[in-house]
Image (cartoon, rainbow, N blue to C red):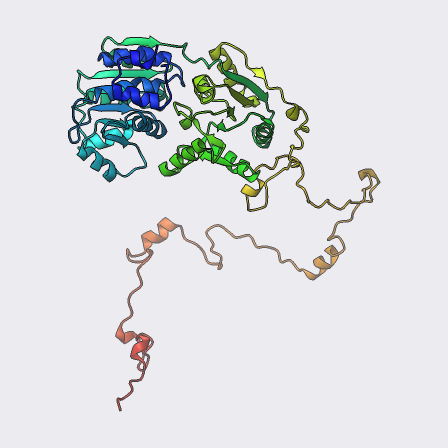
Amino acid sequence: MSFSNLGLSDKVLAAVTAAGYTTPTPIQEQAIPHALARKDVLGIAQTGTGKTAAFVLPMLTMLEKGRARARMPRTLILEPTRELAAQVKEQFDKYGAGQKLNVALLIGGVSFGDQDMKLTRGVDVLIATPGRLLDHTERGGLLLTGVELLVIDEADRMLDMGFIPDIERICKLVPFTRQTLFFTATMPPEIRRITETFLHNPVKIEVAKPATAAATITQSQVAVSRDDWQKRDVLRTLLREAEDLKNAIIFCNRKREVATLAKSLQKHGFAVGALHGDMEQSARLAALDQFRKGEIPILVASDVAARGLDIPAVSHVFNFDIPHHSDDYVHRIGRTGRAGRTGFAISLVSPSDQKSMAAVEKLIGTSIAKHESAALDAMPAHEESAEGEAPRSGRRRSGNREANDDAPRGGRRDGRRERSARPERAPRAEREPRAPANEARAPENEAQRERKPRRERRPNEDRNGGQQQPAAASNAALPPSIGRPQAPRPRREEDFEPGDHSHLPAFLLRPIRARA
């Protein structure tokens, strides 16, 4: 079947042909006719199967008729991340070049003012992340009552990121009669509940078994005994020995690990970019653009880049950390082997990753083979890395932490002075007894010092020798004003002798000079 049999308009078919596509993917072949028929669609397909075009192409056909109104978008597409939202906009710019459509992007990292201006002019297609979309609706600058078509993409990823309450709020803001296209890779119970609540008699399309990797991807794993320097050492060896490596994405579980690994690879001469959630939006888009253009062949990323990013011809994917959720493994390695191309996915498995790796193998239904590498077999033992870095112990005393980023821990630092050898001591039994240090001075001290017998103080006697009265008795015998601490009486003028000016301020005692 070709795209001409799906019911798309002539303008859309011309754009698809110009892009070089002739045969639709299974998800496109089944979803596009139902979408054009104004039916709700529930699409379950693994990543890399062409889900984006499955809703972009029918939307372009339906939007050829009609006109957008100010602050009331005609269609709404929800994406879990900024990168996915920007990628969908690129698809509209690509296939909708011959149409005069207003496409707006509502994502974080961009000023509200610029986005407000676009909404005021009228929007045919609104692509947004849930948080920023709700911010605009709460400010009163956006109305969703005119939405005719709602697309929820990567719904399982929305669940992982905690967006399900936001999705429920948005679904209540759009009209009840809208059409909904719902796409997900897996169907956990929470996602099933959402589909049963907000979809009306959907057409279910499942083109592949959930959470299965493409057959064109060669998967392997490398056992690593440590999580720190040795893991980075093994990764550098794999990058250098890969013959067919055109570009690669390296995934880490934590954003901090992404920054550390990127700096480490740059220090060892690799052209590397980083992508994680704490980066500014402009820096994230710049890193993706450089990677797509081939300016940087290696991209170190967190799971923010694992879902749905369409980066063509990625030859290798490295899992520096095994993901905690086994579903994320399938999405990570799905960045390679796309559109029938061959790809390689290599995972570095440390002792702390064994449990997660077992869950991955259980999910995909097969065991992942050990990576065969002559370079890894030739690497020295763990006491010294392949870069010739000796293990270190203790805390590094140099102030430059980045300079010693990949230095192995454990053992003596290079260049440390050896302690001078001490003469052997005799056994304790053979040593002569040592005399007390103050034994010779003891008689002299006794002769010089005359100690007076300390007189025992009797009860009710003070230190000056006087008799002390019981507090209760003494206070009872005294007048009320005596026996209690009294505030000092201020000194009066009659208390001072004639000529005594000590009570006056110093500035009053200065002599006054007569004016000339």
